[in-house]
Length: 327
Ligand code: MRU
Image 1: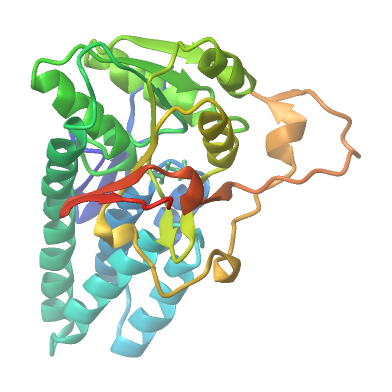
Image 2: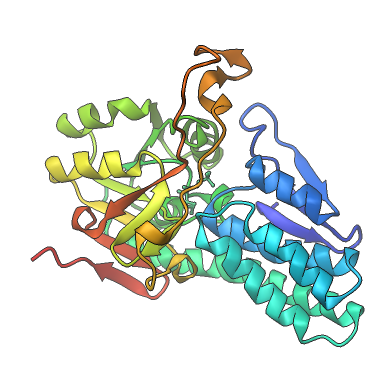
């Protein structure tokens, strides 16, 4: 199934619970906004485009469970704030909410929100295929591509952005290998990227984040390709660690690419105006339920970082490739 879907019979959001991968593949179902917000905050569903679809389906849940337009509007404000950094969550919520508000009855509001949410989900897959088409031209037969976090099927409704580019290049007959960075502290790279690539029999090698400088210096990487949570005026906000790989890639003259749908663009805003989600200290103090640091230690745990355009070769969108002029 897709990463996230609507179940018409049960009137519920269904999604692949990503916190359980790779040990267990389980579909979770949610019938209330409260449960969906909790799932978003725990990263059962994650990745900017998937959050866009989740936000839109969340509006449908609000339409089913609330009794007035005002109550729906109030509830979805909480949904938008569930994770503040990826712009797609608000984008999905706003589109479905606008559709809902054009309904006259509660039933119409639900129907309109659902139509829009399904449209957003379908569009995401089509957009990723287009990103794949454009981006695959940047990859050559035999390339080894380093990626960070998970910008694959599971970060989207299907196909993926950065990993979608790799999938399309392989579909076009190019031999591509991937180096997946672990992506501490929540290990989206080691848990999710490696799992989804192995499912598709795409060759992948796992490294710890701290190894990226060495693999780049040793010329074991031809290109870096990542996704984005938000593209702003001066660059790209993405998973913590992205900036580090971009600095290293620049030093070693390895092209650094970002693949992102236009729904992740927020060009009116500066990175300084975007809230970078800070997550719980427990994510660093514990690992897989085991304590790995003193309980009382002070922790800094931002979930995302900012990479300036100076370090980026090009941004791949569904409308084409934006090459960055470095003068
Ligand atoms: O905290 P996460 O797992 O939601 O972070 C995801 C990322 O940073 C992805 O790289 C980004 O959303 C792009 S996904 C196509």
